[in-house]
Length: 333
Image (cartoon, rainbow, N blue to C red; front, side, top):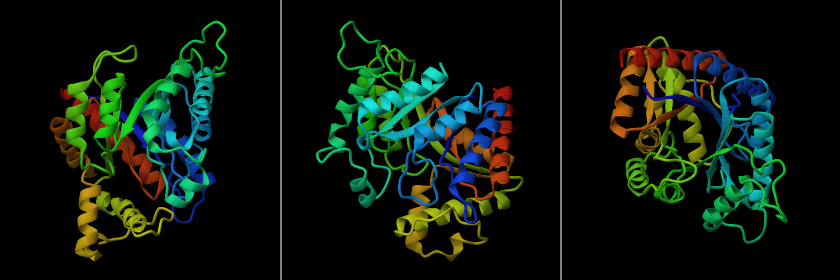
């Protein structure tokens, strides 16, 4: 079986606060490391009361210092929000402290609403159309500094940072293929163009100094529990969060609610069915079957699993159960 990795948004559940969410993030990372997960990534989102990973490089430093082997990284940094030099310095610092463990996923969305995007713009002309040039500038900062080089990232120059391109459309697929970089698709919340993006990336990939062959990682929601019914109950927290977000009411991660989906109107159910179609929800056998079907359908090289579960203990149990299912599949394979 292919490797499993973790995407953690450091969820802030109702009744809790961001500080506890970040402590929970480290706890999850330690459990993921012990269970054999390959990577642990955090994502940059702003102005969202239910997500505590806005200062992504700072949160990752906290996690990296509390773990030993698992790769840590951003999934992703929204590059239009930042000057490439500053990101090179931040992730160069992480790589200097934790050599051989640092990934940097780059996206071109703001990761927030328009009000927050305007509040944190780095200059009046910054926009997503500069994303390819910003990526190339950032890659250059990680190369060893040449004699007499006027501007360099310190730390950063010569550090080992694995750069990924993230996307939820075919744009990122084309860019990743052109630059010869690994590609991660946000199928866990925006699956519409997933198959087209995978095909474009694989067909147009150019081998590079970074990567000899295409590598695709796909986002997948996995909610595992002892029974299918229990897993569906846990899943209702994410469903509520999506409805709230799409209704312009972002908040903390709601407590699970019995029968939530049945209470929705047709429009809301249709939205959830589409946005969360790349989800595996159930007991061990349902999860095993769902993972196998998703990998067979997509040809993914790696899965980046996320689980927005209100109760931290249940979230840990979900990831542990998935690791056990994955190990049994690997043994059979």
